[in-house]
Amino acid sequence: MKPKKQFQAPKGTFDILPEDQKYWEKVRKVVKHVALGYGFERIDTPILEDAELFSLSEGETTDVVEKQMYTFRTKGGDVVALRPEGTPSIMRAYVERGMTNAPQPVKLYYLAPMFRYEQPQAGRYRQHHQAGLEVIGDQNPIYDAQIISMCIAVGVELGLKNLNVEINSLGCPKCRPAYRTQLARYFKARAPRLCKDCKRRLKYNPLRLLDCKEEQCQELKANAPNLIDSLCQECHDHFKAVLEYLDELAVPYALNPHLVRGFDYYTKTVFELFLEDEHAEGGSEKTHERSRLALGGGGRYDALGKILSGKDVPAAGAGIGMERLIGVMKKQGVKIPPLYRPEVFLAQLGAFARKKSLKLFEELRHSGIMVAESFGKDSIKAQLRSADRAGVKITLILGQKEAIDGVILMRDMETGAQESVELEKIVKVIKEKLKK
Image (cartoon, rainbow, N blue to C red):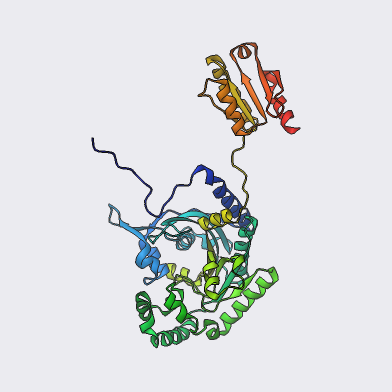
């Protein structure tokens, strides 16, 4: 007989096993707590979207659109994509669902899976999860700073150390063209040393060269012109205000004049949230580069609403990689209590006692008592071993005779002391015991 195929999770995906769920729940809980504290409301958008939503939003020459999108044609002939990121979907929902008529700005957050076809690496997967924050409908720089502050707050409330922000301004359609010309002139003089992708980017979108991770392109970038020097007065004043707000909030940041984001819709403020390795201080620049881990980023995307709806819609937002957060939590030894910690174990002996135990289990659960059981086991020794492993304070033992007499044995797992309690009173007695 031919052996059956051994199925595995697709490349770049993974199973979130029970022992890791506590980290995921902690991240969700903290993001929700921070978001609600700032007046953000949750939104969930479809995993599938019209593929053109992303090609229009992000730009045809971005790596995500060119190489990383999962697209396919439906039976009805529509070309759809698994969303590679959250912001275009949020803006689409904002426009489509009439949120333009709501009090502005509209503050939204999401927790959702994203999909990108790229080479899997540490903390980056083909199916990954993002926590996102979006403020739509207001151009005030205070919201740029607030988004950045919220990203820091999420990390701090998760117990992470050594967080830092790098920040830059990409300018606007008024001042960016002159900078693009300077940048193109700089890299054209060095074109033979560029990687294959950057030689093509130089023709279509020179700003993308600043985002290249290839070593030779990184070295060339170091002496490239700074966009901050080319900002118009409006963008200069906006960026200055953002930095002043961050100073007021005591948010740690560093200016990075060559920082860009991977999508074309960004304008003015852009930033990335990093974890700095505390052991990298005093090392070489290359060692320092290797020691930094990007956890997320974002910025202002005033151009996106215009692209999708033809109307000016100021907006700012950020996305944080949940896998990256969890990886750092584990590395830094952040302690997370288990999601399930039973206080009582219910053991039973015999068919009649097992039947009665089902009802008692429900009574305990409805009373808010965390209870564990091994209903499938007949041996009292095996059940008591399970109670020991569960680390419960109290074990209840219901045998045939006790079930008939309407009583149950209650054992203190620390002292071994045991007493008989009426079944009708057991919930009240256990609550009193647990309080002590």
